[in-house]
Length: 465
Image 1 (tube, rainbow, N blue to C red):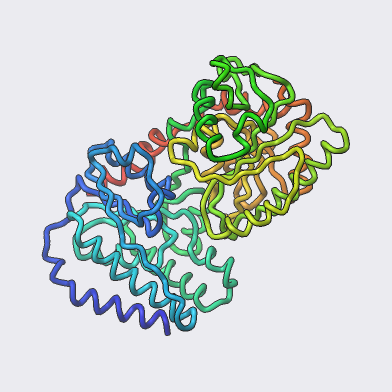
Image 2: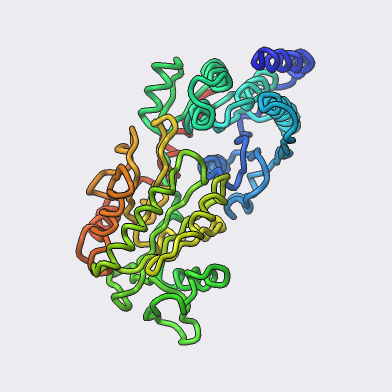
């Protein structure tokens, strides 16, 4: 019933707007990059917008306000940020009614915004979320003579199933909708070969694979930039304050010694005391597809190892990100009383996040794909910074993480705790697996986003006329 009501509503809008069809076709030199989400928390779509802008396209970057996008977006004269009014849901009536109301309001808002912008030749849409954005952008393309390109990051219905279960009516409607309207696109991009195969077999949608690749600003952080970053963060977060950590040997004035965990990137040699803390970094959107209790239990086991006399360094664990489950885990973390481990959960500016990854000793990824078909961009970013990773196992992770080559794959908290013990044994000497993985990442000569995008995606925009 909900699907019929929504389709009837969309049909009425289409009838009212058919006169738009007589307007000229969209300009080939214009593109709209659209995400029904926070623009600042949509890095892949930011990279698409930048790549198009660098190729001379006038880009309308459409989405919700919230987190500040990267400065490269804000300063690019070819990119115009167009905000969708953010819908504030009211907790009135049954949840199904609330959801239908939200979809109808988002449909109207997105239609209005997409018809207001200068006519684009292409609309590049992120999915998920695809309801109602796929149908709306398809209708706009039909009315304005534009081409629709969908960038499939995952399936929206599998994300919904984490909350509602696979057999829930809304999940089944979302699956039907996603498959039906996904076929109406002109071109499709996806993030893994596994997702490409699934789209073709189960949805009759042909796509090209564009793996997430790190932009050039994800790299190992020079010592001076590490120092400035930790000085900045120490103002707000205790784990970054000098008095709570082993004082490093820094090539700077004595009054400025509040940074820690410094490494000479050029030589790979440690420049300070052996008992310094190790910096462990994870990033998250704090959603159901990441179980951070796994990491917290592993840290408890790691603490026991130290208490038992093992030669392991203290840890500073930094978990970055925003999301619905952050408050829950923050309260859980507050109940844990570590002697050798400090945990903080900051939100970093877009420019600071690569610097943090490039300064860390180990990354941890707890992303477990709802479909098993997408890959965590956070690991891509970590690899761009030559940061080894421990990642939780799921179906197609092998397309990114090579076990015992650039990191380790674990199944549960006990296995992760054992990996932390192995990697940090007699830290921070330059021997051992941790530095072997880092050397492997340095010599891998990873393809960067710009080059990968140019080879894979740009032909869709240059050869589609």
